[in-house]
Image (tube, rainbow, N blue to C red; front, side, top):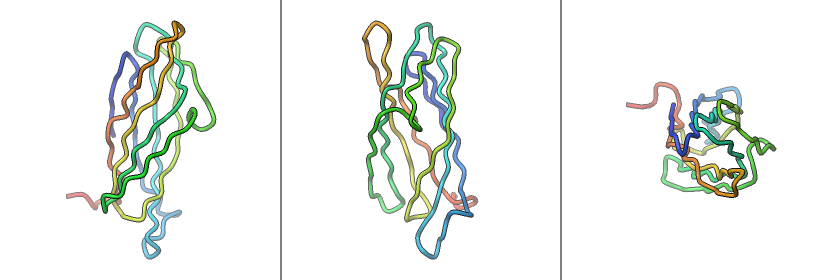
Length: 127
């Protein structure tokens, strides 16, 4: 699990390996991650876009950018939270993800909410 807070926006990520969608013989490792975005600050903020940096076990990096998350651009008022689950497919049994969400305030200001690095790994495969 990873957690980071930026300007009152707390991003927490939990990861699980999805064996029924994975095929290690075919170098396919599927991971699900659940993200909770909570507004612990004093001002509303809307998630407009995402930027993920995915690094596999061989050091290959893939960057993913796009609008919103799971087809939504949620606005979080103080005290609100939004949770969603998505997935990532790697060709190695280990990797890492990190990133940012671009947030917009009603006054027109913007900031990047940090998504702290988290590991993607088969259960019991970490030392």
